[in-house]
Structures are given as C-alpha cells and as structure tokens.
Length: 460
Ligand code: PEP
Ligand code: CO
Image (cartoon, rainbow, N blue to C red; front, side, top):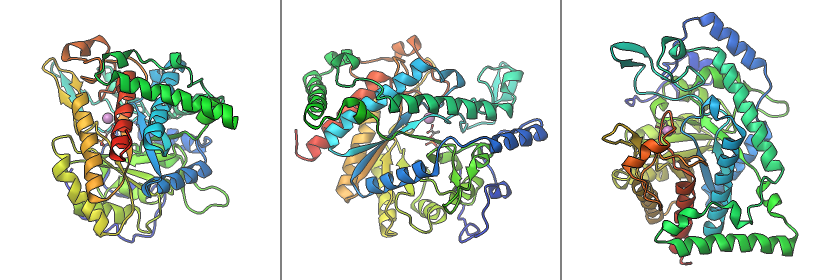
C-alpha cells in the first residue's frame, strides 16, 4: 500500500467500535450474503469475552516496563493458526517451546520475560491478491480459517460468516487449555529429559548450549531448595495472547465496555497488532485501533517512511500512554541497516517512548526453486543481530522479538544446527501460509539471543 497523510484522522473525536465502517477498508472478505454476516456478528457480540480488562491493563504495564528497558517481550506462534491445530498435543508443544525459550532468555538477559503467544485468534490473513487462478479456474484467495477454507474448491473458498463463530469457539478452547496448563504448573522444566536437545550435538556451539541448559536446571533446583519456590510456580506466570487485528467485524464484535473502567476494550485478545498491509493512518484499521484501550503492535515494513510512522503514532497514541505502542520492525536482513536508523531517529525526535521489537521473519521470506516458501535461519539471525547492534549504537533498547514458530518438528525454514536444506523442506512442510521455525530452530534462536546479550553486556 502507499502512504497518504491522514489529515482527517487527526483529533477526530467521535469513535465507536463500528466507526471504521465509514473508512476505506482493506483486506476484508466479500461475503455473498450480508444478512447472514450481520446475524453472525450479532451472535458473536452477545457471547462472553475471552480475556479481561485487568489482564489487558497488566500487560500494558509490563510492556511499559519493557519499553523502559526493564523487561523483554517474547512473542511467537504460527503465521496462521488453523482450526485443526486446536489439539492438545500441538498446543502443549507450542506452550512448551515458548516457556523453554523464555527460560533461556531470562537466563541470558537477566530480565523478566513477557510471554505472548500468537494464538487463540490468529485465524485471519492478509493476502496480496483477492483471487487465485489454477488451471484456468479463478476462486477467492484463502484468507485464513476465520474466513474460508484452504482447499481449492468453490465451496471451501467462498467466505462463510459462520466461521467467525467457529473461530471464536476455537480461540476459547485454545485459551481454556493454555490457561489450565499454565495454572497447573504445566511441566517440570528442571528435568533435562523434558528438553529435546538432540540438535545441540550438531552445533558448533554444542558445549555452550549444554552449559546454558545445565545452568538453567541448576538455578531452578537452587530456587526450589532455597526459597521453596517450585518450577511449577515459576511457570505459573502470566501468559498473554495476541493476533493480527485484521478482520474488523470479528474484532469490533468483541469490543466492549466494562464496569468501573473508561473506554473500550478488545476482549478477544490481550494484544492485537496492525499488519503492514493495513497500516494506513487514514484507513479503517487505524480508525478501529485508535479507539481501543489495549496495547497495540504496529508492524513496520520496508515501505514505511518516518512521516508515515509518526502519523500512525499521532493517530493511535495521541496521549502518549506508556506501554500503548510496540513497534515490530520486519525489514529484512539486507535492508535493516539502511531502513531502521531513520525510523528510530524520527521516533526519538518526536520524544516518543515505544517498545521496539524485531520480527526477523517477514522481511526474509523467499521461494525455493522447487516452489516452497521458506526462510533461511542465517538470514533470520543476521536481521536479529543487526537489530540489536543498531539499537545499541543509537542508544535505544531492543526490548522484544516476534517469531513465527511451532513446537513441532516441521521442515519449513532452512538451516539451524541440524543444517536443514532445500531438499528437506518437502519432508514435513505443514504451514498453509508462512514458514515457521521448528522446535529446535526456535530454541536455538533463543540461545543465540541469550548468548549475544551476555556478550554485549560483557558476561560470557
Ligand atoms: C504476519 O505477521 O503473519 C504478517 C502478515 O506480517 P506483516 O503484516 O508484517 O507482513
Ligand atoms: Co506470517
């Protein structure tokens, strides 16, 4: 999309959860039966919320602390959740890898980690084209399970408003299970056999990784013995949800007022973000997001200019509320060095405090000769390392990472300690949309970040 300054948006007082409908909308499905859509939205609006306003406020406060350099945000999950991912084994594995990554990061960064899943609502996807043509047949593009099915048939590809309700229900089931796992102490993270560390052997840094994990285990046992805190209690910490706030009918139907608090909360998730393709300050998404109290993520891609970014900040956060804005840059390993400094400097010039987070996935997507969408582990790490350096040199704090990952042994990204190659991708490529780090690659990423920060801080 192209940037148009948003003179209209500035200072517009009258906002309602539906005021976005009067703005130019992008990336919304076209349903064949508008009456059926309104009926589904009415039903959704009457169902109970998935999260509470006090959880949302607690996350905002923690993000404000991260923006001030005292915490670190770990945000991760699938590019797109599918309804069939709502299974105990997959959810358990996803939670496990995120918890283990957060322990590794706590160890390396000596900071508390804010854990946020890209789950319980990550069902709608922006697409570059409205239609897809195969062998002369043209059908609506797949926009995520919240909208239609991925199979290439007219029936599955027709947007179905009942999926809004199925998505809400899956999100509720996911959240219910995750809350129970977290509440119950989940699993004994002290035990080495619970960590699948087979890959460590294949790394040139094997000894270092092993030391890190041993040391985490020792610390957990030490705390348990000395302070009587069990590992179960340690993992019984906050866990938050996030998704791209893309499908505005779904988001606005779950936007509510609550007793004893001012304003409107999106109670379908703690932490919605605006995607790069819908970040027009004069568009429907900015209009919707400016009126909610939740902390808001903004994806910052290569097309974003400093003026555009400042316009978005003025629109979405005129009152400069601490923790309100997280800027998630995803510029690509080959462009970040040129593109990030002017953006950081513009934000600094405006005297704004935001939380900076790096998404090293979305600027590094490529297609292999055999047609797979993939990402190279080395490029992902390179963007991350450059991001840490650039922020360090300018004097800002990189306080988060945003990753697409899964707890399973998929083969979607190339590289990592086991050295996955192009030819391996066909073995277990399961993503309908973007390629994810698998369990081992995700854990290794956390270890490399931990190691990097330790070095930067002069501890080795
Ligand atoms: C995503 O996070 O899956 C996504 C589509 O990101 P972006 O808007 O940054 O391209
Ligand atoms: Co993605």
